[in-house]
Amino acid sequence: MNDSVCCEHPAAPDAVCDLIRVRQPAGSVLLVGGGCEQLINLSTRLHQAGFRVSVAQDVRAGVEAALYHAPDVVVLDLDMPGHGGLGILRVLRSVPTAAETPVVALASENNPAAERVASCDMVARLMVKPVTGAALTRVVAALCERRRDPVREPAAQQQG
Image (cartoon, rainbow, N blue to C red; front, top):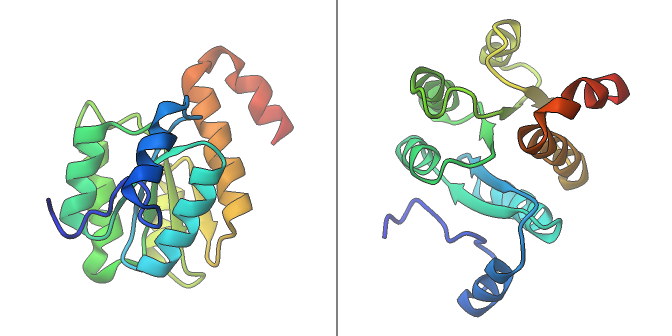
């Protein structure tokens, strides 16, 4: 197994992961970023909300996981070293099977890549760090709902 990819829920023992996989998930989420503590906190919150969560801690693992697992939503830290977050985003948008996957970008307030990404409509949502688990869960839930029921999308946008 690639050391840069955590289990589906990095904070849970294997037995707990097996039990959690049995219930119907609210959707699948891939978290990609370099800060392991932040990833574990966000992963735990999403997992508690019923999402199937995978975590990748670097660019290569993020691209591989996104293409192999085809998650409903990708949560991507744009502050990864060496334009890593932006590189992953460019790859996802260039691959037909991943081009329509909603991406939630997390970025520090002064990240110039965030402004570029937001102005080009490359992401479904840009969130400025620090991001709370509750706020991210609401955004991911809405995006998963739109993917499952695209007919309801205009109504969901009017409420938001």
